[in-house]
Amino acid sequence: MFERSKARGFEAVMQRLTGILVFFWLAIALALTVLSSR
Image (cartoon, rainbow, N blue to C red):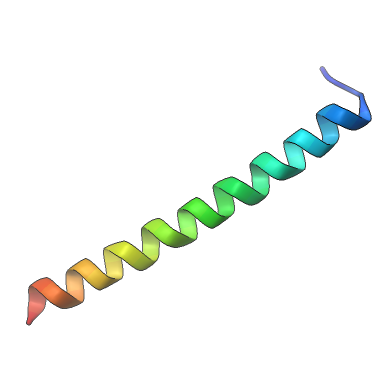
């Protein structure tokens, strides 16, 4: 759909942000499970 350098850069940034968000969500979920298990 978008074949511009700006679109590509925005898409790359969005992919990186989503990856970081998923990583943080997994880390928070792990911390919550560990805290709740104790």
